[in-house]
Length: 355
Ligand SMILES: [Zn+2]
Image (cartoon, rainbow, N blue to C red; front, side):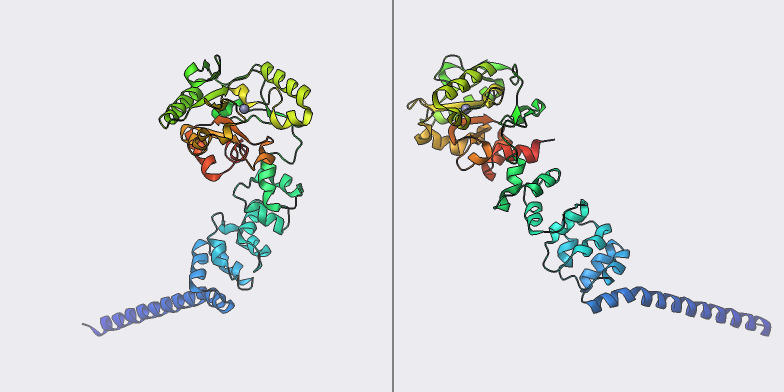
């Protein structure tokens, strides 16, 4: 190799070495600088896990965290089901050690104008919290704040019959009819069929077709256990209900009538999806609660799609006295949910059906 060539090679080596050194310096300082945030976060008190989780989500969040003192429950915050990484600084603006993380997330995510309070914590953590009802929850004052969501969802912040809305009959088997939702005079759901004498103590009871099919299965199943459940009162027209209510009012007074009977248009019986039952042996509905048939219905009616519509202890929600005899067809799946969760149809409808 000539001397000239050797010199050229040496020169190339030097250039290459210089380049490598420069790259190393550059990379090293990059790593050092980018690690600076992590180091300062560690100084504040964050664990490596917390830091890497937050950084992986959003690089900006590293800088956000540095602006705040150590967030002791950062893990709870970032693992909240509704945590949104772009809102981190807003969460931290209202964060403090003793506050409920879930409430903070709900307030920020939904731009809620109410400041953090214990009442708000109770409300947003209720299983059946509905954001659209928030203003009503907040302006509803009762001592037992744990009941705010249920009561407002079921319209108890309004007077019965004063703010009546037409029932949305497109809800089908899940339509609601009560003291707040009313049917048109000529309405009933689907096809009404006559209940066979075998299943009724009357001659001409009528039920919606599928409700009747489900009721027959229920009665047949109970018969196998030597229990005799019968229809005592099924579909009622608007006019039948009107006469009934007027008679109750005349005979027993207004207060009694309100607790036991619906206004015309507000009776579930008008849908064709509800019925009162009795035991073949005791016959009257009033005695039904003390029959073996009732005990069976309590445990089994949901398997056929029926719910006890006006349960004991829920009178303040349904607006009716406990009626052991009144059942409503809602389909098996919904009936099971309502049975298993011990809620009323009002509560179910507000949360799962209302659009
Ligand atoms: Zn009834």
